[in-house]
Length: 314
Image (cartoon, rainbow, N blue to C red; front, side, top):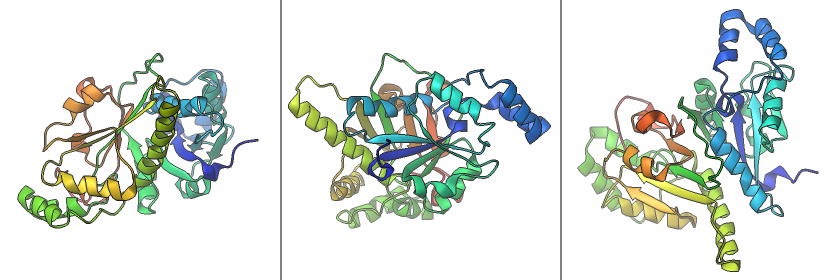
């Protein structure tokens, strides 16, 4: 019997994020749903290629292999397919050995309203409308951007990177900066409020639950000094001193921390991303979501004032 889902860290993933569906989606666009159904049924045994979120999801599920007693994580498939057209997706999941047993097939409708029912701390999709609708309902979601997929199967470590403002924290500081695009005004505001933690942003819950995984690993290291950690979390923010202190204040108030934190002061984030090599990076600013060669899986969190009007921020 499956473990109770309310006790798990759950990630909901759309088939469009997990697999490369460009070819079958083009059939849908060109010929409509009936021809799409026939196409998927005719190709039911043709394995779908790995999508942008695949390396992240595969490693995330591997956490359960290291902690079989707790089985602390789960992935649920959310799909606009019908169960019939979704069979190809489920066959591909089985082919790759992904431990995904729960699924929601919506037959053309958006699946995001069911995220709370599955206790999801994140919804990953390549459908921008679904992601924006989820965020508008205060559900944690991210838009997977196109990139080339690299998945070194000998590398078992899971590396997750987050921007801070508009992702882990709310967009209060971003709003101050955007008012006049004035860095000095922003620093003055953050210095004045240095002792006041930020309110949680859309992915604060995900970050906090990943921190619980860190504590599991810390206990494992205390029991076995030779234990090799499988999870590394980084915060990569355009902030620098003196505004860095409120980041520390916020995380400390939540009882969480990152393994690595970078205050870049506006430096190009891709320089750090190229070294850290995350399997997924979350940022609310499209201008920050780039990497050399386009090989890092990038996720846009279209939240807050940064996505209400043009311009770079924090």
